[in-house]
Structure formats: structure tokens, C-alpha cells
Image 1: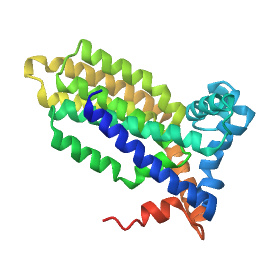
Image 2: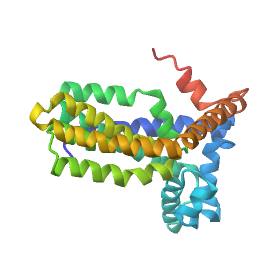
Image 3: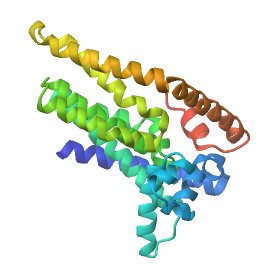
Length: 278
């Protein structure tokens, strides 16, 4: 990448490093339950300690959601273990920091597609990305959200590449193939997010309707008919299950929030949710 890509990667990695240090202090000195006894510890245990990390991706997904993130972390834990480095949380969190920084690089590339070479907008993007509290949590806690952020940034860049210069041959094919290849990744990261590639497809088609001339809109109508048929089939077949999964996950997080944050020094509560930054 260019100088701005290197700049945003460096800035975000350093911000993630700082927040990871604060997160480690809260976990080690104040017993942050969100890191020591909830999802974060479960992901750490599965990827660094448990022998189940050697299962296949499909078998691991049956036991624990987020199998792809677990396998990715486990790869680095095993690699550094071979070099004599203890299997501590900072290895997996360092992977999250890299995913967070790479997401920023992809977002900057998306901004370049939209606005061209605009240093003012690039600097504004770097400032906004590096000061977002929820992204600090993605980078500094042993959770899978940094991987999801990276995948969302990737699929956004794919479809913006198509929309920047609408071309139903090469660019459209590339965006479709990219979305199809990312779909199983979303499944192995978080099952509820399978709708994201479909959502981006419909948003891209809707955007095309604002740009295409009348003589080319028949292509758009054919794509909408095909997409509508596919959406109708999947919504009638899997819609109820997907809604139940989303509601179940939401209720579980509400319970987790009430049990984990009560009476504890939570990194999310103390530094992000209640941060003094306006």
C-alpha cells in the first residue's frame, strides 16, 4: 500500500497496543470478569489450551461458535509455542490488533475509491477510526469481533470497487465471487451474520438503479428477480431459525452483561461505555 495505508496501519496498531495494555492491567490487577470468566476466556481457552483446537473446522463449529477465529488464534499460539513463548492471552490479542489495523487499511482503500486521493479525508478517517471506543475493545480483548470487522471491511471494498465503475462483466463477477467466498467465513465466525453478504448484494443493486441508464436497466431487473427469488426461498426455509438464533444470542448477551459487569472492573464499562471523551 501507499504512505496513507502504512500510516493508518501504524496508528491503529499502536492504539490497539495501548488499549491492550490497559485491558491487561484491568484483567490482571482488577479481575475484569469480561476477560477472565466469559466469552473472552472461553475463546482463549479453546484456542490456546484445549486439545479440541485441533479438531476440523466443521467439528469445532459444532462445539463452539467462532471456529475460524479459534483456528486462527490456535495457529499463532502453536507457532509461538514452538519458539518457546508461553501460551498467554497477549498472543491472541496481538492477532486481533493486526486484524483491527488491517480493517483500517481496507476502509482507507474504500475511501480512496470514493473520493480519490484526498489527504484531508484520509486524516479524518484515521482520527475517527483510532478514537472509536468499540473498536478499541475489538482490538484489545480476546474476542472474534476484530475478524468480523475485517471481513465486513473486505466485502465493503469489494462492492465499492464494482460501484465505482459499474461493470457487469469483470467487476461484478469479482464482487460476486468475493462475496460468495466470504459467506462461509461469516458462518464460521458468527452464524447470525450470514445475511451480511446478501445485504451488501441488495444494497449494491439498489445503488445501480440510481446510476444505470434506461437501456441497461434490464440487467438490473433480471438480477433483482433472481435475488428476490433466492431471498424468498431462504427466508421461507431458514428465516424462522435465523430470527430465533438472533433473539437467543441477544438474550444471552443481556444476561452476560448483567452478570459480568455487576460489581466488576470491566474494560468495556470503565474505559469505553463511560469514557469521558465526548
